[in-house]
Image (cartoon, helix red, strand yellow):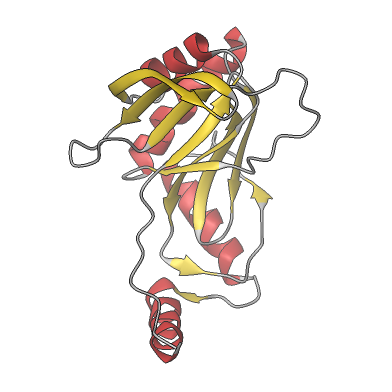
Length: 188
């Protein structure tokens, strides 16, 4: 059997109930740019689409599509995750999220560590879970999630995160874990 060609994740599209507030949230709060928009006849009827990107090399990274029923009992989207460049950006987004939670734009703000990442989880205006995260230099066995105190200073928070990660099963420097996974992938 032939090996599977290299695949790289590109984008996600999901249905929304109310396009306009979702468009505002993803452009104004999350910083995406609308790269295209339009309507298309589909198997579920005429749908409106908004294409969004934060990378000029990517036509779209997120697609919002109308058609999500308002009475769904379960959201099949587990989470949409976005990496930030560093701790200063995570702090800035946390401040913005605190203000947005107070105004009711987002809900369920939860800062956590996974050992291998420091993350901010929250719900967008339609209840989709969003993760904003930065990688840590460590690996620990997953899944793992512990609440994180964003009121600590940068130095104190990093010290706490490292001490906690070192106490968990599987702790190794991230590069050691990446080397192991690369060997495993090559063997497959």
